[in-house]
Image (cartoon, rainbow, N blue to C red; front, side):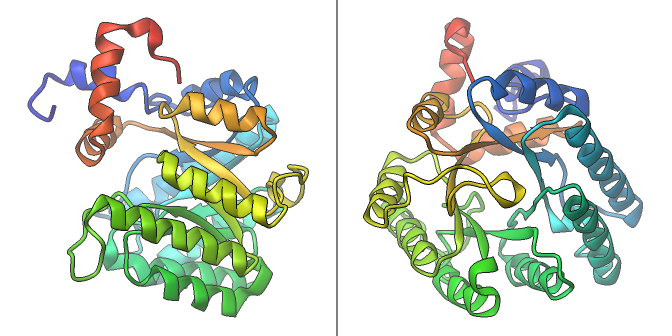
Length: 306
């Protein structure tokens, strides 16, 4: 796919990206709201090369929060700390993230710190803890099941924040060394399942972000054993009753709709922006299952329902 003409990549990527503009994301969310979904929105881009780029992301996310409020959408935001300058100017990055998190708090919204590769795992957790120390509890972090350190990170964060702990747990998209991460599918699934269990046991808000049926089934079993599947999907920042399920835009829509029909809060990760090409290529590289979606979308476009 990286050698394919850009228009072919775009045709595929647009299943997983709302579009290039904020208006595309707003339209996508309005369309999917009818299916009972809520959203977390990501402005595409990471690891910038100058703080001028960080200013763009700060301004764009500020506009995005206003647009979510204006349109009455049940949506939060996801941000990548490196897009705010974490690897260039740590102090400025913290200031930028604090500014956005404060605005989100005033609007009753939530900020999710996306987890990037292992170079910034601890830094990302530290950003979240620093925001909590300033009274900004409307912020949580993503942890990756594949990393060996994840169980200890859960313990550490929960010990610090108690019931204010808020995680998104996913398998992890970055291919890390076997020195620090599981590299076999079965082990990654086992570790992700263990992380789900640990988060629920510690009373943390747990967002299960996986398209893998074994992970979803494990999460459902854990929730049933705790009597957590009958709660109302209401509360601070429009969250679920201690948990929710999250899906990438364009992936496993059938599973998402089934969970929603059974009363589970489901959240769709909606990315938009001009860097759709890089995002699309990364999705194609990281997930072999995407290949089947690609062929099906190209040969049978009528099946290409998000």
